[in-house]
Image (cartoon, rainbow, N blue to C red; front, side):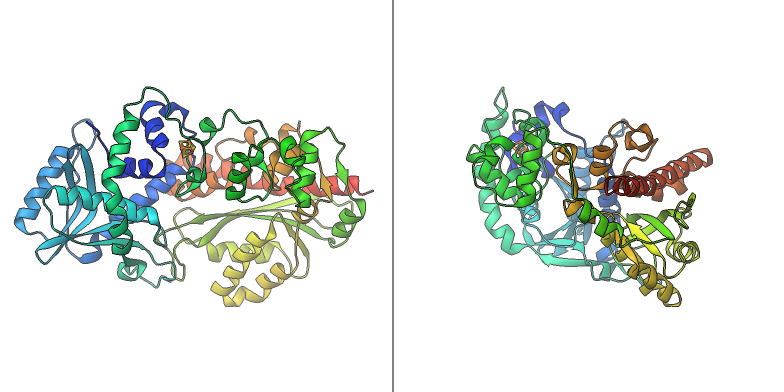
Length: 500
Ligand code: SF4
Protein backbone atom coordinates (compact mmCIF):
# COMPACT_ATOMS: atom_id res chain seq x y z
CA UNK A 1 0.00 0.00 0.00
CA UNK A 2 1.12 3.56 -0.71
CA UNK A 3 1.81 5.57 2.45
CA UNK A 4 1.87 9.33 2.14
CA UNK A 5 1.82 12.37 4.39
CA UNK A 6 1.12 15.99 3.47
CA UNK A 7 4.78 16.77 2.88
CA UNK A 8 5.34 13.62 0.81
CA UNK A 9 2.30 14.43 -1.28
CA UNK A 10 3.79 17.87 -1.94
CA UNK A 11 7.09 16.19 -2.89
CA UNK A 12 5.14 14.03 -5.33
CA UNK A 13 3.41 17.06 -6.83
CA UNK A 14 6.75 18.85 -7.31
CA UNK A 15 8.48 15.83 -8.86
CA UNK A 16 7.75 12.09 -8.50
CA UNK A 17 11.50 11.44 -8.59
CA UNK A 18 11.87 13.61 -5.49
CA UNK A 19 9.39 11.39 -3.66
CA UNK A 20 11.26 8.27 -4.83
CA UNK A 21 14.70 9.60 -3.90
CA UNK A 22 13.51 10.71 -0.47
CA UNK A 23 12.39 7.13 0.19
CA UNK A 24 15.12 5.09 -1.47
CA UNK A 25 18.22 7.32 -1.62
CA UNK A 26 17.89 9.85 1.19
CA UNK A 27 21.67 9.85 1.61
CA UNK A 28 21.96 11.66 -1.74
CA UNK A 29 20.21 14.71 -0.39
CA UNK A 30 22.31 17.86 0.07
CA UNK A 31 21.54 19.09 3.53
CA UNK A 32 20.52 22.72 3.79
CA UNK A 33 22.07 24.23 6.96
CA UNK A 34 19.20 26.71 7.23
CA UNK A 35 16.54 24.01 7.01
CA UNK A 36 16.38 23.19 10.73
CA UNK A 37 16.11 26.90 11.56
CA UNK A 38 13.20 27.25 9.11
CA UNK A 39 11.59 24.13 10.56
CA UNK A 40 11.89 25.48 14.13
CA UNK A 41 10.52 28.80 12.95
CA UNK A 42 7.54 27.05 11.32
CA UNK A 43 6.84 25.22 14.59
CA UNK A 44 6.85 28.47 16.57
CA UNK A 45 4.46 30.06 14.09
CA UNK A 46 2.24 26.96 14.13
CA UNK A 47 2.10 26.95 17.94
CA UNK A 48 1.22 30.63 18.06
CA UNK A 49 -1.52 30.29 15.43
CA UNK A 50 -3.27 27.60 17.47
CA UNK A 51 -4.82 30.32 19.63
CA UNK A 52 -6.05 32.36 16.67
CA UNK A 53 -9.70 31.41 17.16
CA UNK A 54 -9.72 31.28 20.95
CA UNK A 55 -9.92 28.07 22.98
CA UNK A 56 -8.57 24.95 21.30
CA UNK A 57 -7.46 21.41 21.95
CA UNK A 58 -4.32 19.88 20.50
CA UNK A 59 -4.13 16.19 19.74
CA UNK A 60 -0.35 15.86 19.33
CA UNK A 61 0.72 12.71 21.21
CA UNK A 62 4.02 10.88 21.47
CA UNK A 63 5.04 7.28 22.06
CA UNK A 64 7.61 6.28 24.65
CA UNK A 65 10.33 6.38 21.97
CA UNK A 66 9.56 10.06 21.24
CA UNK A 67 7.90 9.40 17.88
CA UNK A 68 4.44 10.77 17.09
CA UNK A 69 1.67 8.41 18.21
CA UNK A 70 -0.52 8.69 15.13
CA UNK A 71 -3.09 6.13 16.31
CA UNK A 72 -3.63 8.06 19.51
CA UNK A 73 -3.82 11.35 17.60
CA UNK A 74 -6.51 9.94 15.32
CA UNK A 75 -8.41 8.51 18.28
CA UNK A 76 -8.35 11.85 20.07
CA UNK A 77 -9.41 13.69 16.91
CA UNK A 78 -12.48 11.48 16.55
CA UNK A 79 -13.27 11.91 20.23
CA UNK A 80 -13.14 15.72 19.98
CA UNK A 81 -15.23 15.71 16.82
CA UNK A 82 -17.83 13.57 18.60
CA UNK A 83 -17.78 16.03 21.51
CA UNK A 84 -18.33 18.97 19.12
CA UNK A 85 -15.09 20.76 20.05
CA UNK A 86 -14.76 24.08 18.18
CA UNK A 87 -11.03 24.15 17.35
CA UNK A 88 -8.93 21.00 17.06
CA UNK A 89 -5.23 21.53 16.36
CA UNK A 90 -3.19 18.86 14.55
CA UNK A 91 -6.46 17.00 13.90
CA UNK A 92 -5.32 13.70 12.43
CA UNK A 93 -6.85 11.48 9.78
CA UNK A 94 -5.88 8.47 7.74
CA UNK A 95 -7.49 6.97 4.67
CA UNK A 96 -6.07 4.03 2.79
CA UNK A 97 -2.45 4.81 3.76
CA UNK A 98 -2.89 8.55 3.23
CA UNK A 99 -2.25 10.43 6.46
CA UNK A 100 -2.65 14.08 7.31
CA UNK A 101 -2.74 16.33 10.36
CA UNK A 102 -4.74 19.54 9.91
CA UNK A 103 -3.10 22.53 11.61
CA UNK A 104 -6.44 23.89 12.80
CA UNK A 105 -9.74 22.09 12.17
CA UNK A 106 -12.48 24.58 12.97
CA UNK A 107 -16.13 23.73 13.49
CA UNK A 108 -18.26 25.44 10.87
CA UNK A 109 -22.03 24.73 10.90
CA UNK A 110 -22.53 21.04 10.28
CA UNK A 111 -18.98 20.55 9.07
CA UNK A 112 -15.40 21.61 9.61
CA UNK A 113 -13.09 24.07 7.87
CA UNK A 114 -9.40 23.36 7.28
CA UNK A 115 -6.88 26.05 8.27
CA UNK A 116 -3.33 25.43 7.09
CA UNK A 117 -0.71 27.57 8.87
CA UNK A 118 2.41 28.76 7.02
CA UNK A 119 5.15 31.15 8.06
CA UNK A 120 5.11 32.62 4.54
CA UNK A 121 3.73 36.11 3.86
CA UNK A 122 1.71 35.18 0.77
CA UNK A 123 -0.33 32.42 -0.77
CA UNK A 124 1.43 30.01 -3.11
CA UNK A 125 -0.04 27.38 -5.38
CA UNK A 126 1.74 24.61 -3.46
CA UNK A 127 -0.26 25.52 -0.36
CA UNK A 128 -3.41 24.88 -2.39
CA UNK A 129 -1.92 21.49 -3.31
CA UNK A 130 -1.24 20.74 0.35
CA UNK A 131 -4.75 21.73 1.42
CA UNK A 132 -6.36 19.82 -1.48
CA UNK A 133 -4.69 16.65 -0.25
CA UNK A 134 -6.01 17.30 3.26
CA UNK A 135 -9.53 17.90 1.96
CA UNK A 136 -9.34 14.69 -0.09
CA UNK A 137 -8.29 12.65 2.96
CA UNK A 138 -10.85 14.24 5.29
CA UNK A 139 -13.73 13.76 2.87
CA UNK A 140 -12.80 10.11 2.46
CA UNK A 141 -12.86 9.88 6.26
CA UNK A 142 -16.44 11.17 6.24
CA UNK A 143 -15.77 14.78 7.32
CA UNK A 144 -17.94 17.48 5.73
CA UNK A 145 -15.25 20.02 4.70
CA UNK A 146 -16.97 23.41 4.51
CA UNK A 147 -13.96 25.63 3.83
CA UNK A 148 -10.25 25.61 3.07
CA UNK A 149 -8.10 28.46 4.33
CA UNK A 150 -4.50 29.50 4.58
CA UNK A 151 -3.27 31.24 7.72
CA UNK A 152 -0.08 33.13 6.91
CA UNK A 153 1.90 36.14 8.09
CA UNK A 154 0.82 39.70 7.35
CA UNK A 155 4.11 41.39 6.46
CA UNK A 156 2.58 44.86 6.97
CA UNK A 157 2.00 44.21 10.67
CA UNK A 158 4.02 46.46 12.98
CA UNK A 159 4.28 45.26 16.54
CA UNK A 160 3.21 47.57 19.35
CA UNK A 161 3.89 46.96 23.05
CA UNK A 162 2.16 43.58 22.81
CA UNK A 163 1.96 41.01 20.03
CA UNK A 164 -1.54 40.94 18.50
CA UNK A 165 -1.92 37.58 16.80
CA UNK A 166 -5.16 38.55 15.07
CA UNK A 167 -3.17 41.25 13.26
CA UNK A 168 0.00 39.22 12.80
CA UNK A 169 -1.85 36.54 10.86
CA UNK A 170 -4.00 36.95 7.79
CA UNK A 171 -6.46 34.38 6.50
CA UNK A 172 -6.79 33.64 2.80
CA UNK A 173 -9.64 31.64 1.28
CA UNK A 174 -7.90 28.94 -0.77
CA UNK A 175 -11.06 27.59 -2.44
CA UNK A 176 -10.09 28.87 -5.93
CA UNK A 177 -6.83 26.85 -5.77
CA UNK A 178 -8.34 23.85 -4.01
CA UNK A 179 -11.32 23.51 -6.37
CA UNK A 180 -8.91 23.01 -9.29
CA UNK A 181 -6.20 21.03 -7.56
CA UNK A 182 -8.38 18.48 -5.75
CA UNK A 183 -9.39 17.07 -9.14
CA UNK A 184 -5.76 16.08 -9.71
CA UNK A 185 -5.39 14.09 -6.48
CA UNK A 186 -6.55 10.66 -7.75
CA UNK A 187 -4.32 10.72 -10.86
CA UNK A 188 -1.34 11.93 -8.82
CA UNK A 189 -1.85 9.10 -6.34
CA UNK A 190 -1.87 6.60 -9.20
CA UNK A 191 1.37 8.13 -10.48
CA UNK A 192 2.87 7.78 -7.01
CA UNK A 193 1.98 4.07 -6.95
CA UNK A 194 3.71 3.51 -10.31
CA UNK A 195 6.81 5.45 -9.32
CA UNK A 196 7.21 3.93 -5.88
CA UNK A 197 7.08 0.44 -7.40
CA UNK A 198 10.23 1.18 -9.43
CA UNK A 199 13.50 -0.44 -8.40
CA UNK A 200 15.70 2.26 -9.96
CA UNK A 201 15.58 6.04 -10.18
CA UNK A 202 12.50 7.21 -12.13
CA UNK A 203 13.49 8.44 -15.59
CA UNK A 204 12.74 12.11 -14.97
CA UNK A 205 15.09 14.80 -16.23
CA UNK A 206 15.83 18.05 -14.45
CA UNK A 207 13.47 20.91 -15.32
CA UNK A 208 11.65 23.91 -13.95
CA UNK A 209 10.27 21.70 -11.17
CA UNK A 210 13.76 21.56 -9.62
CA UNK A 211 13.32 24.96 -8.04
CA UNK A 212 9.58 25.43 -8.10
CA UNK A 213 7.94 25.52 -5.63
CA UNK A 214 11.09 24.71 -3.64
CA UNK A 215 14.79 24.30 -4.41
CA UNK A 216 15.19 20.53 -4.58
CA UNK A 217 17.67 18.96 -2.16
CA UNK A 218 18.59 16.34 -4.81
CA UNK A 219 19.81 18.90 -7.33
CA UNK A 220 23.47 17.88 -6.96
CA UNK A 221 22.54 14.22 -7.38
CA UNK A 222 20.40 14.81 -10.47
CA UNK A 223 23.03 17.03 -12.12
CA UNK A 224 26.12 14.97 -11.31
CA UNK A 225 26.44 14.04 -15.00
CA UNK A 226 26.86 17.69 -16.03
CA UNK A 227 30.23 19.32 -16.71
CA UNK A 228 31.49 21.85 -14.21
CA UNK A 229 30.97 24.70 -14.73
CA UNK A 230 27.84 24.31 -16.82
CA UNK A 231 24.99 26.47 -18.05
CA UNK A 232 23.68 26.39 -14.48
CA UNK A 233 26.70 28.38 -13.25
CA UNK A 234 26.22 31.19 -15.75
CA UNK A 235 26.18 34.60 -14.11
CA UNK A 236 22.73 36.16 -13.70
CA UNK A 237 20.92 33.96 -16.22
CA UNK A 238 17.33 33.19 -15.16
CA UNK A 239 16.74 29.55 -14.29
CA UNK A 240 14.09 29.19 -17.00
CA UNK A 241 16.62 30.29 -19.62
CA UNK A 242 19.20 27.88 -18.23
CA UNK A 243 16.73 25.01 -18.54
CA UNK A 244 15.90 26.09 -22.12
CA UNK A 245 19.59 25.94 -23.08
CA UNK A 246 20.02 22.63 -21.27
CA UNK A 247 17.18 21.08 -23.31
CA UNK A 248 18.81 22.45 -26.46
CA UNK A 249 22.01 20.59 -25.55
CA UNK A 250 23.84 23.82 -24.76
CA UNK A 251 25.28 22.67 -21.47
CA UNK A 252 29.01 23.32 -21.21
CA UNK A 253 30.44 26.82 -21.32
CA UNK A 254 32.23 25.84 -24.50
CA UNK A 255 28.94 24.86 -26.18
CA UNK A 256 27.29 28.06 -25.04
CA UNK A 257 30.16 30.33 -25.97
CA UNK A 258 30.21 29.14 -29.58
CA UNK A 259 26.43 28.90 -29.94
CA UNK A 260 26.17 32.64 -30.57
CA UNK A 261 23.09 32.71 -28.34
CA UNK A 262 24.62 34.59 -25.43
CA UNK A 263 24.96 38.34 -25.87
CA UNK A 264 25.44 39.47 -22.27
CA UNK A 265 28.99 40.83 -21.98
CA UNK A 266 29.60 39.57 -18.45
CA UNK A 267 28.36 36.09 -19.34
CA UNK A 268 30.56 35.98 -22.44
CA UNK A 269 33.55 37.10 -20.43
CA UNK A 270 32.79 34.54 -17.74
CA UNK A 271 32.77 31.74 -20.32
CA UNK A 272 35.96 33.00 -21.97
CA UNK A 273 37.68 32.78 -18.61
CA UNK A 274 36.29 29.36 -17.67
CA UNK A 275 37.22 27.81 -21.02
CA UNK A 276 40.74 29.20 -21.33
CA UNK A 277 43.66 29.97 -19.06
CA UNK A 278 43.67 33.73 -19.40
CA UNK A 279 45.67 36.06 -17.25
CA UNK A 280 43.57 38.10 -14.78
CA UNK A 281 41.84 41.08 -16.37
CA UNK A 282 42.74 44.37 -14.69
CA UNK A 283 41.26 47.70 -15.74
CA UNK A 284 43.60 50.04 -13.89
CA UNK A 285 41.67 53.17 -14.81
CA UNK A 286 38.39 51.72 -13.60
CA UNK A 287 39.95 50.55 -10.33
CA UNK A 288 41.69 53.90 -9.85
CA UNK A 289 38.42 55.76 -10.41
CA UNK A 290 36.81 53.65 -7.71
CA UNK A 291 39.72 54.03 -5.27
CA UNK A 292 39.68 57.79 -5.79
CA UNK A 293 36.17 57.88 -4.29
CA UNK A 294 37.65 56.65 -0.97
CA UNK A 295 39.38 58.88 1.55
CA UNK A 296 40.99 58.77 5.00
CA UNK A 297 39.98 58.09 7.66
CA UNK A 298 38.69 54.96 5.95
CA UNK A 299 36.21 52.60 7.64
CA UNK A 300 35.26 49.03 6.68
CA UNK A 301 31.86 48.02 8.07
CA UNK A 302 29.88 44.79 8.10
CA UNK A 303 26.62 43.94 9.90
CA UNK A 304 25.23 40.61 10.98
CA UNK A 305 21.46 40.45 11.26
CA UNK A 306 18.73 38.08 12.35
CA UNK A 307 15.22 37.71 10.97
CA UNK A 308 12.26 37.08 13.21
CA UNK A 309 9.06 35.83 11.63
CA UNK A 310 7.22 36.79 14.80
CA UNK A 311 8.36 40.32 15.65
CA UNK A 312 9.79 40.38 19.16
CA UNK A 313 10.41 44.09 19.53
CA UNK A 314 8.15 47.12 19.44
CA UNK A 315 8.14 48.81 16.05
CA UNK A 316 9.40 45.77 14.13
CA UNK A 317 7.56 43.77 11.47
CA UNK A 318 7.70 40.10 10.47
CA UNK A 319 10.92 39.21 8.65
CA UNK A 320 12.62 42.53 9.45
CA UNK A 321 16.40 42.22 9.33
CA UNK A 322 17.47 43.13 12.87
CA UNK A 323 21.18 44.00 13.15
CA UNK A 324 22.79 42.53 16.26
CA UNK A 325 26.49 42.75 15.47
CA UNK A 326 29.04 44.67 13.49
CA UNK A 327 32.73 44.62 12.81
CA UNK A 328 34.62 47.78 11.96
CA UNK A 329 38.19 48.00 10.72
CA UNK A 330 39.58 51.47 10.13
CA UNK A 331 42.71 53.35 9.14
CA UNK A 332 42.96 56.95 10.26
CA UNK A 333 45.49 58.27 7.74
CA UNK A 334 47.60 57.09 4.84
CA UNK A 335 50.16 54.58 6.08
CA UNK A 336 48.33 54.44 9.42
CA UNK A 337 47.85 51.38 11.58
CA UNK A 338 44.87 49.10 10.91
CA UNK A 339 42.57 49.26 13.94
CA UNK A 340 39.46 47.31 14.85
CA UNK A 341 36.25 47.85 16.79
CA UNK A 342 33.27 45.57 17.15
CA UNK A 343 29.86 45.24 18.69
CA UNK A 344 27.88 42.15 19.63
CA UNK A 345 24.56 42.55 21.44
CA UNK A 346 23.32 40.45 24.33
CA UNK A 347 21.23 37.59 23.01
CA UNK A 348 17.56 37.81 23.96
CA UNK A 349 17.19 41.59 24.17
CA UNK A 350 16.40 44.17 21.50
CA UNK A 351 19.88 44.88 20.08
CA UNK A 352 19.02 47.91 17.95
CA UNK A 353 19.39 50.88 20.30
CA UNK A 354 22.70 49.76 21.83
CA UNK A 355 24.07 48.93 18.37
CA UNK A 356 22.98 52.26 16.89
CA UNK A 357 24.51 54.23 19.78
CA UNK A 358 27.78 52.31 19.59
CA UNK A 359 27.91 52.72 15.82
CA UNK A 360 27.58 56.50 16.19
CA UNK A 361 30.38 56.47 18.75
CA UNK A 362 32.65 54.30 16.61
CA UNK A 363 32.11 56.07 13.27
CA UNK A 364 32.45 59.87 13.32
CA UNK A 365 30.38 62.04 11.01
CA UNK A 366 31.68 62.86 7.52
CA UNK A 367 34.13 59.96 7.16
CA UNK A 368 34.39 57.49 4.32
CA UNK A 369 32.72 54.19 5.22
CA UNK A 370 32.86 51.12 3.00
CA UNK A 371 30.82 47.95 2.90
CA UNK A 372 30.66 45.01 0.51
CA UNK A 373 27.29 45.20 -1.23
CA UNK A 374 26.43 48.36 0.65
CA UNK A 375 22.69 48.19 -0.08
CA UNK A 376 22.35 45.80 2.84
CA UNK A 377 24.25 47.91 5.38
CA UNK A 378 22.61 51.14 4.16
CA UNK A 379 19.16 49.57 4.45
CA UNK A 380 19.77 48.60 8.08
CA UNK A 381 21.21 52.02 8.93
CA UNK A 382 18.20 53.82 7.46
CA UNK A 383 15.89 51.54 9.47
CA UNK A 384 17.83 52.37 12.64
CA UNK A 385 17.53 56.07 11.80
CA UNK A 386 13.73 55.68 11.50
CA UNK A 387 13.56 53.78 14.80
CA UNK A 388 15.73 56.28 16.73
CA UNK A 389 15.10 59.83 15.48
CA UNK A 390 17.56 61.30 18.00
CA UNK A 391 20.38 59.38 16.25
CA UNK A 392 19.03 59.86 12.72
CA UNK A 393 21.30 62.75 11.69
CA UNK A 394 24.45 60.82 12.56
CA UNK A 395 23.21 57.50 11.15
CA UNK A 396 22.08 59.07 7.88
CA UNK A 397 25.44 60.78 7.60
CA UNK A 398 27.11 57.35 7.77
CA UNK A 399 24.64 56.11 5.19
CA UNK A 400 25.35 59.03 2.84
CA UNK A 401 29.12 58.48 3.02
CA UNK A 402 29.06 54.78 2.20
CA UNK A 403 31.12 53.37 -0.68
CA UNK A 404 30.70 49.85 -2.03
CA UNK A 405 33.59 47.40 -2.53
CA UNK A 406 31.37 45.32 -4.76
CA UNK A 407 31.59 48.02 -7.46
CA UNK A 408 35.08 47.30 -8.89
CA UNK A 409 34.31 43.59 -9.10
CA UNK A 410 30.76 43.71 -10.42
CA UNK A 411 31.81 46.38 -12.90
CA UNK A 412 34.37 43.92 -14.20
CA UNK A 413 37.44 46.06 -13.47
CA UNK A 414 39.19 43.14 -11.83
CA UNK A 415 38.42 39.60 -12.93
CA UNK A 416 40.10 36.21 -13.00
CA UNK A 417 39.37 32.58 -13.73
CA UNK A 418 38.47 31.66 -10.15
CA UNK A 419 35.81 34.40 -10.07
CA UNK A 420 34.48 33.11 -13.40
CA UNK A 421 34.27 29.58 -11.98
CA UNK A 422 32.48 30.90 -8.89
CA UNK A 423 29.87 32.58 -11.08
CA UNK A 424 29.09 35.53 -8.80
CA UNK A 425 30.72 38.46 -7.02
CA UNK A 426 29.91 37.73 -3.40
CA UNK A 427 32.80 38.30 -1.02
CA UNK A 428 32.83 34.52 -0.36
CA UNK A 429 33.66 34.04 -4.07
CA UNK A 430 35.91 37.04 -4.69
CA UNK A 431 38.11 36.61 -1.60
CA UNK A 432 39.34 33.04 -2.31
CA UNK A 433 39.60 33.94 -6.00
CA UNK A 434 42.19 36.60 -5.14
CA UNK A 435 43.77 34.91 -2.10
CA UNK A 436 43.50 31.20 -2.90
CA UNK A 437 46.12 29.94 -0.47
CA UNK A 438 45.78 32.24 2.52
CA UNK A 439 44.55 30.28 5.56
CA UNK A 440 43.98 33.55 7.42
CA UNK A 441 41.33 34.49 4.85
CA UNK A 442 39.69 31.08 4.58
CA UNK A 443 36.20 31.02 6.09
CA UNK A 444 36.46 27.23 6.36
CA UNK A 445 39.10 27.68 9.05
CA UNK A 446 36.69 29.49 11.35
CA UNK A 447 35.06 27.64 14.19
CA UNK A 448 31.30 27.38 14.55
CA UNK A 449 30.25 30.28 12.32
CA UNK A 450 31.23 30.31 8.64
CA UNK A 451 28.51 32.39 6.99
CA UNK A 452 25.71 34.84 7.67
CA UNK A 453 23.06 32.13 7.82
CA UNK A 454 24.90 30.37 10.64
CA UNK A 455 25.40 33.68 12.43
CA UNK A 456 21.71 34.57 12.29
CA UNK A 457 20.76 31.08 13.46
CA UNK A 458 23.20 30.91 16.36
CA UNK A 459 22.79 34.40 17.82
CA UNK A 460 19.17 34.14 19.06
CA UNK A 461 19.96 30.73 20.60
CA UNK A 462 22.89 31.94 22.70
CA UNK A 463 20.67 32.99 25.58
CA UNK A 464 19.54 29.37 26.03
CA UNK A 465 23.06 27.88 26.10
CA UNK A 466 25.09 27.04 29.22
CA UNK A 467 27.50 29.92 30.16
CA UNK A 468 30.68 28.31 28.78
CA UNK A 469 28.97 27.58 25.46
CA UNK A 470 27.60 31.12 25.35
CA UNK A 471 31.11 32.48 25.60
CA UNK A 472 32.32 30.18 22.85
CA UNK A 473 29.42 31.07 20.54
CA UNK A 474 29.99 34.80 21.08
CA UNK A 475 33.70 34.36 20.36
CA UNK A 476 32.89 32.50 17.13
CA UNK A 477 30.48 35.21 16.02
CA UNK A 478 33.04 37.93 16.68
CA UNK A 479 35.73 36.08 14.74
CA UNK A 480 33.40 35.50 11.80
CA UNK A 481 32.28 39.12 11.50
CA UNK A 482 35.84 40.36 11.99
CA UNK A 483 36.96 38.26 9.02
CA UNK A 484 34.29 39.89 6.85
CA UNK A 485 35.75 43.36 7.35
CA UNK A 486 39.35 42.14 7.38
CA UNK A 487 38.59 40.56 4.00
CA UNK A 488 37.46 43.98 2.74
CA UNK A 489 40.74 45.50 3.93
CA UNK A 490 42.67 42.83 2.01
CA UNK A 491 40.58 43.42 -1.13
CA UNK A 492 41.23 47.14 -0.86
CA UNK A 493 44.99 46.55 -0.47
CA UNK A 494 44.94 44.26 -3.49
CA UNK A 495 43.04 46.83 -5.56
CA UNK A 496 45.63 49.45 -4.56
CA UNK A 497 48.41 47.04 -5.56
CA UNK A 498 47.10 46.14 -9.01
CA UNK A 499 46.04 49.70 -9.89
CA UNK A 500 49.61 51.05 -9.54
S1 SF4 B 1 16.51 17.73 -8.77
FE1 SF4 B 1 14.77 18.00 -10.11
S2 SF4 B 1 14.59 16.09 -11.21
FE2 SF4 B 1 15.87 15.70 -9.44
S3 SF4 B 1 14.45 14.97 -7.89
FE3 SF4 B 1 14.67 17.14 -7.62
S4 SF4 B 1 13.02 18.06 -8.74
FE4 SF4 B 1 13.22 15.95 -9.47
